[in-house]
Length: 223
Image 1 (cartoon, rainbow, N blue to C red):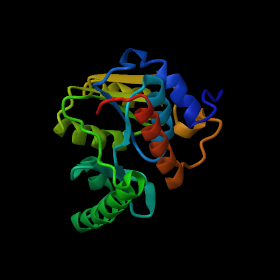
Image 2 (cartoon, rainbow, N blue to C red; image 1 turned 180 degrees about the horizontal axis):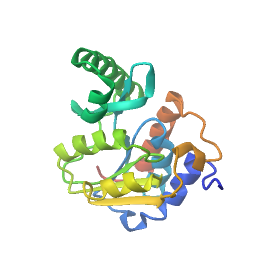
Image 3 (cartoon, rainbow, N blue to C red; image 1 turned 60 degrees about the vertical axis):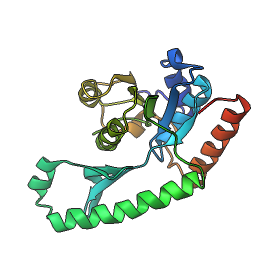
Image 4 (cartoon, rainbow, N blue to C red; image 1 turned 135 degrees about the vertical axis):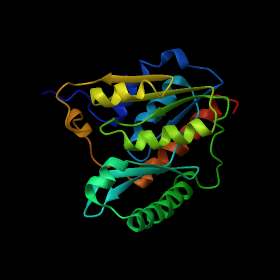
């Protein structure tokens, strides 16, 4: 098995080549899912000359196995739950609500940290490209999609460098367009397709958003 992408930034450069039709359009915005999706989205936004923002999503992790998500929350008060998994694992409603409250606090903290005083980009009536570093189970992207639909974009594209075939197929019925650069049959985890899949830090996210804002201003993009 060969690793396809050198890094998230490299994956973003490759992903951007699949989105060239959206370049230099005033109605297009790019949203990265923090944290790992932001370096990918940054390269996409630079190539397309489109504004970049974060769209906050937090997984709801199973107690003791936090990487296993039984749901997710997103900006706008949206919560998506995997009811089958909750039933199988016997997770109580009180536990679900407690974890939700905890993750809502973290979601708001990160929004303030990443964006500072800047307002979020307007989604209504815009062509929105939602970017992550990959799709495994798709729980985070699913929550983002539900939340964004409520904000009434004119078009919604999901774009990732790599994804599990079944997950990418699932989203084709929910988004207006799904771009998965590669969909390996032998898919186990997103990170196995990257040479460098080290964790993206908060400061890197902040720096990329600030850099994108400077790039945007220098090209006089109207928001």
